[in-house]
Amino acid sequence: MKTPILFFCFSIFFCHAQEMDTTLHELIQNNLAKTIELRHWFHQHAELSNREFKTAERIAQELKKIGLKPQTGIAKTGVVAVLNAGKPGPVVALRADIDGLPVKERADIPWASTMKGIYNGEEVPVMHACGHDTHIAILLATAKVLYALKDKIPGQVKFIFQPAEEGSPPGEEGGAELMVKEGVLKNPDVDVIFGLHISAQTTVGQVKLKPESIMAAVDEFRIDLKGVQTHGSTPWTGIDPIITASQMINSIQTIVSRSMPLTKAAAVVTIGSIHGGVRSNIIPEDLYMLGTIRTLDDEMRDVVLKRLDEVVTHVAAANNVGAKLTFLNSYPVTYNNPELYHKMLPSLKRVCGAENVKSMDARTGAEDFSFFQKEVPGIYFFIGGSKQGVDASKAAPHHTPDFYVDDSALETGIKAMTTLTIDYFSTGL
Image 1 (spheres, rainbow, N blue to C red):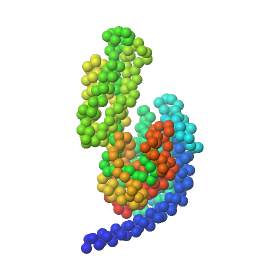
Image 2: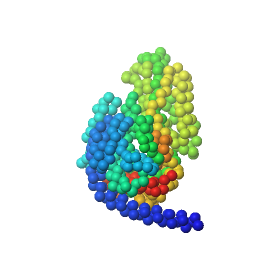
Image 3: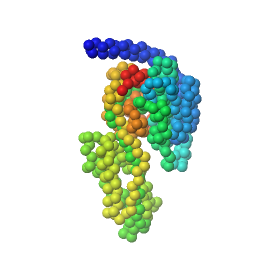
Image 4: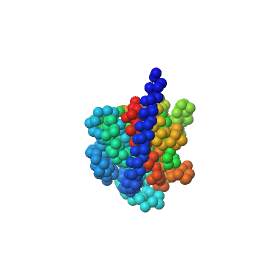
């Protein structure tokens, strides 16, 4: 008799889901124009990591208009609000990142950013070159829709507007790691968390995700080399850190090609910056390099870190150069809990269309949403931002001056976040 009972329960849930989907659709459509307006405002007022003052102020204002009581100053400039505070039942967290990047916008749009900020001691242009403006607008709209349904939600929803996803300024803490440290997943204790990211290289309406590792762990590092300065015409009278650096870079590139089982998972080691010397005829005393490591497997990550230390130590010793390896920012792997993934995937397919929800390969980009997922089960997914009818493969990449995502993407994000939340309370883990 179990099968009829299960079928009956499923039928009740399916009918309830259809009714709720209709209600959600109406609420989303009624608020869509306001959501687009907010997206444009946040885009025009882009601010750098840990400096999102106007952004946070506007978020708090909008949450108050909805009827929520926002907390500000979380992890410096973060904003948090709780729906149904104190109500018994599960607690679902929803997260949006809010910071921009030091990039000058070239997109020809009336709401282009003209903001400036201070980055590494210099004044720089600032734009939302990664789509965080859309994330803010989507989460605010989600909060408004769920507030309208708060009496039907058997639990609490925590809205997390997170600063500094792109990395806090040197010498500062920030982002998801600091939010977790300050207890953002406590009081009330979060059961699950959902987050999304817009993708310029994906068509509007599509959703992409996968179980387990979806984005890489990142380990940024600095290598300082110390030689002996001398005239460029007599290199034998000094110790050359530049030659050492060139040998070191070549050897570092063999870490992946010769030490990694690449059929298991991808790995990347990149040197992205090198600084040393002032003239063509002076061999400098000092030199430093900056690099990044991306891994999708914890065991492989351990091997890369060990091999990097060995390469730096031994190549420097072979050239009689002093060397210091320092690890900077590190993010864990962004990991979608498999059980939660399989429970919530039908919800995304139902509300977005099964043909629009696609499996994806893991990406070697990184996301500090991973710090939340280390503490509680979470799902992170991508939504399309390239306007329908446009070749998404030709869209400007994220973090570039020509980056652009279309307003029509917002609806998919709101549908996904509201549906995941509502359905989780019906199905749960």
